[in-house]
Length: 143
Image (cartoon, rainbow, N blue to C red; front, top):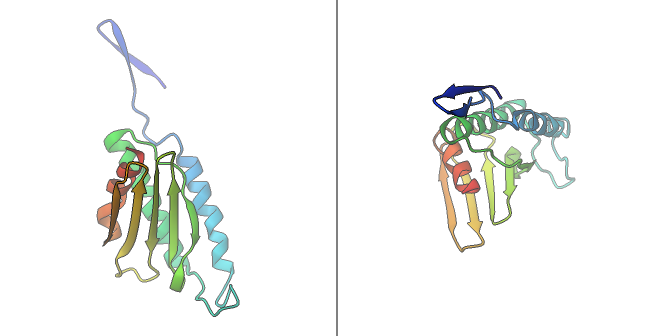
């Protein structure tokens, strides 16, 4: 990181991208393998995963990660990106003292569901539009 001098002290330049952005992109690309599973991937009739849902999940994670970084210089831990019910995708984050599960539905107009708790007894849960909660939820996760 380049620094600029201001008086007697050096102030680090803010990076344009979060330091773990390559890891985030890699996790999204790895989750793309679920698209090849097709319908009945689990032998129990489960719906397969669509390109559109995978793309929305990637967009959600990338934009939330970037916004958290730009607003708060916060670095989100890497989630597990897992199969959810009915063609939805789950994000599961676990830190030393917090855990959160977020379900991104297959249908774009449906609300996402989230649940998080902490070792201090805090609980957050709800339903919301993906465009309104990403950075806020991630900020809660890294508090």
